[in-house]
Image 1 (tube, rainbow, N blue to C red):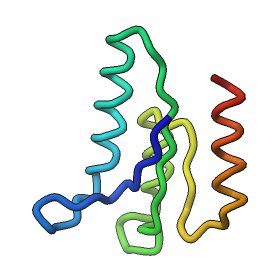
Image 2 (image 1 turned 120 degrees about the horizontal axis):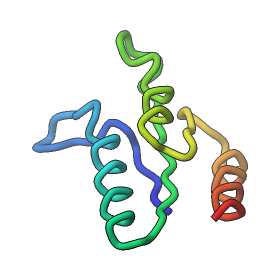
Image 3 (image 1 turned 90 degrees about the vertical axis):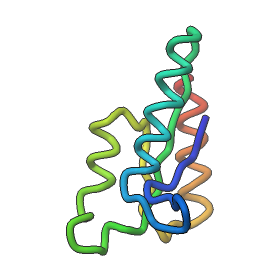
Image 4 (image 1 turned 30 degrees about the vertical axis):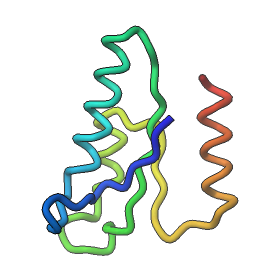
Length: 87
């Protein structure tokens, strides 16, 4: 299982699709190896203009679950538990 923030930094600059690319690469590599990796995408960027649907986009691109920041630890644990149950 991987938990990735959708917006990651590259060379000290935010990359809005960086986390989605990371999730795609990890899941693709796992599939090539005959494995399955669950992915949880997190982001607080939904409050920014143009990024309101970024978590929906993550789901459409194969992310197994999403969490909007800020979230409570219990929410995080519930999602992780759900992902582990379906594995």
